[in-house]
Amino acid sequence: MLVILMDDQILAPEQVCQSCLLADRSGQPRWRGGQLHCGQAIRKLTEQQPEQYECIMGFRIADIR
Image 1 (cartoon, rainbow, N blue to C red):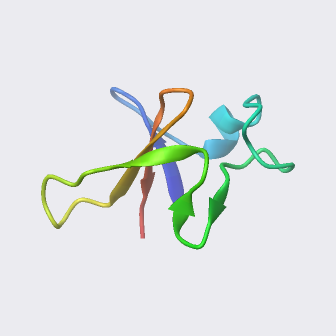
Image 2 (tube, rainbow, N blue to C red):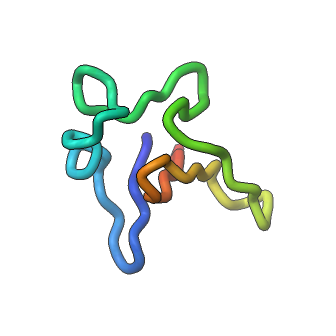
C-alpha cells in the first residue's frame, strides 16, 4: 500500500495525487512492477524502513506492506 508521508501526517495518495498531472487516469501515482515511475527511490538508512520515493512534486511516498 502506498502512502504519502508529510511532517506529522500520513495521507492516502488519493488526497494528493488526484490533482497531479503525472498521476494515472484514476488519480493514483504511476506505480508499476514495484517501482514509482513518477519519482525516484530514496536510499534506505536501515533495512527495517519501507521502500521510499520522492515524487517529482516533492512529496515522499512509502510502500507500506
